[in-house]
Length: 208
Image (cartoon, rainbow, N blue to C red; front, side, top):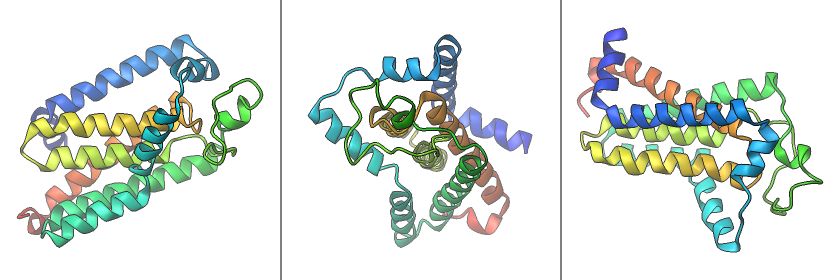
């Protein structure tokens, strides 16, 4: 397992390096600012056009989007990739929902309801299921397995950017704090790695 993980990291240096830098930058902010303060600092500029853009990226992080991607892969006879996409989505989703259940954290819409002016009516959620971000987990899981699967390593750049934009959309729309998004990203990557290693062990699935 250690050998497979080492090889996976070696073959996907950009994705893992970029992810490491993202974690370091996020941790620096989390250590220096309370989560509410960090939320406002990351989210102090809003326009109607940005609202539409980040609504789109949030949609692209929905679970049904992952199912659609898996179905497309299956239809194009990429059965191994379809399995990777759906299994990593299910695992990351399960982990995220378990944490939400046992660690009920208030969303920004509740904690900052009276002090933050950019919450979006009928979009921003007001509940106690903030930690972690399920959208971020799904997006990073998808970006990771697609990066691992395809030999064209330049794809890791737009895929990583996609996952980051989905994650940031959850902050922009007022549904999550940075710690929620970072945790979701970690869950997504770990889920992708675990599913990749398990699928790689099954030689009958390695043809396509």
